[in-house]
Length: 72
Image (cartoon, rainbow, N blue to C red; front, side):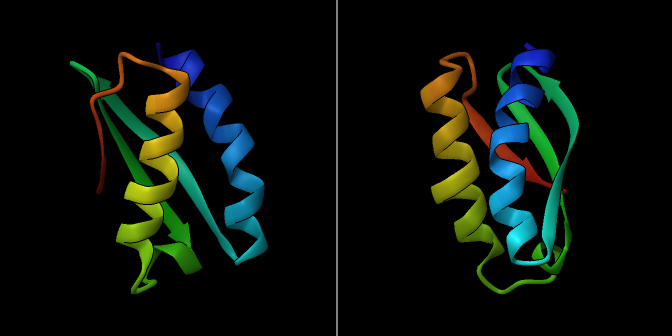
């Protein structure tokens, strides 16, 4: 499942990089994906919305085993 998640994150990264940010996969366990938002995304006030409405939504759509995404 980790490989599938990395593939999806590769598709998401260009959008985050366009705003000066990035995302790193930290861990996957029991359907919970843990990521670290980097660059401008790390301290952005709307990073929670980016995480839930963007990253989590896309991962859940493409990988049904994903239950939720958490940021470290």
